Picture 1 (cartoon, rainbow, N blue to C red):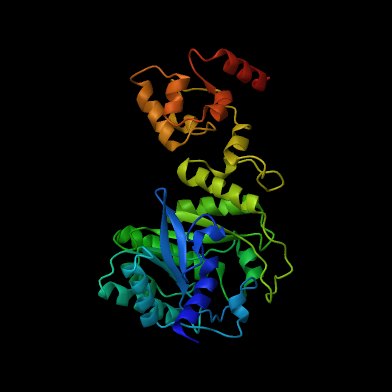
Picture 2: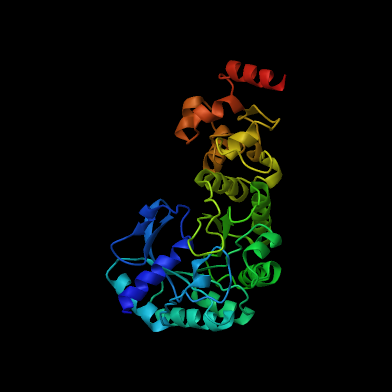
Length: 370
């Protein structure tokens, strides 16, 4: 098999490791193998995303690589050569590198680290996201972090029992959570390691875990490990795997989990503030709006309310909440000024009290409390 054919196979296999919130096919360049797009500060950034090998000794029941009959591999030199060619042609701005586990975790990690070492020695100083292999040694993780911009290890499920359903070769507490803890501790001691932090990925719908299970786990790992991003991969049945007859995850469920994660990581919500019905988020409602309907703080007076109350108003984000606090100390707040600050008044109006704009809102609050 030619180099180009192997790159095609291994870049196709890499599509399930997410580098963006969207798993839409439009996030991929189909003309050149291995090019996927991520979003950064409003821009689409092309990455070369590829596996070192699709050979894997793990037995994950959802993954086609665990039963791959024709394993394909690339050497560290080959990946470096292809990436540098793409980079020099301005096809890509960064690398996203992962791998199956061909023999044991540290043997695979050595080849991943060698790939990064070659690129850095060749003078490439840009973005590299490296997937850490579950079960890797602390030494190999530290050396990987010295070379990578960001590292991640897939947590896969919200509970140990969930992972036990999917794999008999991975230990949730030891192979995954302990490694995430190591990464966190290494970054606290040496902030220059993996300066873009660590992220993780969780599969939705592969096992019978509720949204409440998932949100509580996500809140826990944010608190414990300072995770930069959590990616949610909606389960897709793969022919030839033990889970091929299981139904596909609802895309709206995945979207609501992303929104819930944003409330935890960017808005200061706790999992207990979100509203679940039978353990699940309402797919018809934004989780922030649904949560607001159960809170007794509304309507809030924007002229005096603290930040943690303002940020809970639907239609107000972190930036506009800070602008409200800054502006109200200098001038009078009006609906027009709020709109200019980015407040979505059509969503916020029922939840706020504003001098000169209070009769409708006051009645709404009175009716709601009664």
